[in-house]
Image 1: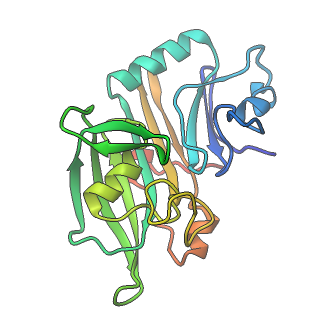
Image 2: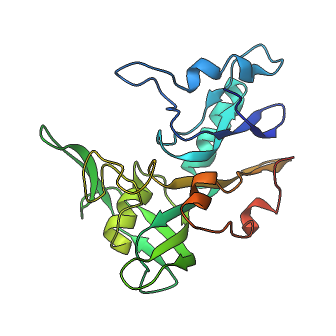
Image 3: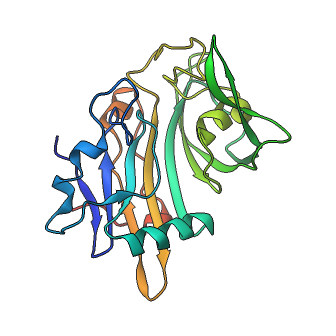
Length: 237
């Protein structure tokens, strides 16, 4: 597997993670990002380390640190909310509004029958997602929308839970929050794409990366939107 590099300098890599590749080794075993870290050394002695996580189905921008000092700085940047990200998502509804902010604290629940998921809960961890409608296709009750999310916080499954509980529909293909649990109904995967990332750095230019519009989003009938301002218009060469 050839993993595209979206950004590279002496302390950071941003890769274009393929959909279907887990960041961590699944309990059942199988391929994961760790199997590709050796090739991502790119001449460095150390293998890079993922700074954050993307769900297995989620494609797009994933930040890796190339040394322990950089990892520590990037972790602090995430804690201090100095990391800006945008995601693209597909929902099979047309939202009532064209933009907004979802503020729903999230808590984890688990059961033997249904496994675990995140739900809105007053005593949960604060979670904030800003969103805007980019495109709607279809007619009547068969509409499909492209949404751009700008999460302010980074809770587990935040956008997947906020789509369902804040916008009123799960992400297309989501097997956990969708209408048919355990099935990717209507899509080859959960339709979520990490479009851009921006990390501010003291004394250095910000890390910026943009991941191109996914082919399976195009096959779903949607059109690539303009590159958002957050990426400074920087596209991979």
